[in-house]
Length: 230
Image 1 (cartoon, rainbow, N blue to C red):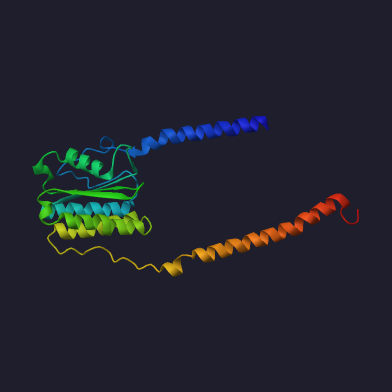
Image 2 (image 1 turned 30 degrees about the horizontal axis):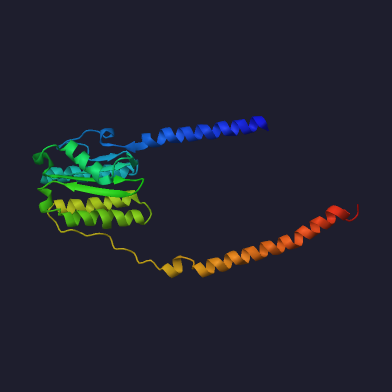
C-alpha cells in the first residue's frame, strides 16, 4: 500500500508537470506563425487543426480565384490559444503589420483570426478593401456569421465557410448575402425549470433516506442476532 501511494503521488506530480510545460507551448504568438506576404500562395493557416482538409482546399481555391479576378486577398488563421499577454485584437494587429508592413501592401488585404480556445475572432482589412468591406460589415461577419455559428456548437468548418461566402461575395463587388438566420430557442421546452429540478432532487433524497432508514436497522439487527438459519 505504501508503494502504491508513492506511485500514485509520482504519477500525479508528473501529470501536473506535463500540464505546466505543454500549456504555454500550445499558445501562439506572431512569431509562431509562418511569415506570409501580399501575393503569397498560402491562404489558410490552421494551427488549431479546426478545419477539415476538404474545406481547407475549398477555401484555398476560392481565395485564389478571388485574388486572380479582383486583386483582393483573404487569409484565415486559426490558433489553439493566445499567449498570456495578448488579446485576439493585438495578435491580429501584429500579424497584419508583420505580413503586410506597408500601407500599399495592406491595401487589398483581409485577415481573419480565430482563437479556438476562447472562440474570440478578429478581422483586419486594408484601406482599399474598406470601400467594399466596411467596418460595420466586418463586425457583422465576426459577431453574427462566425460568432453565431460557434455559439451553436463550435462548428468551425461551417463558420469559416459561411464567413468565406460573405467575404468573397463582397470583395467581388456583389451584394452582401448577410449573416445566417438566428434560430429561435424555446427556453421552456429546452431547459428544465428550477422548480422541477428542485422537486426531482427532493424526491431522490426522500427515496435514499427511506432506503437507508430501512436498511440500516436491518443490518444492525442481523449483525447482533445473526442471519436466520445460522
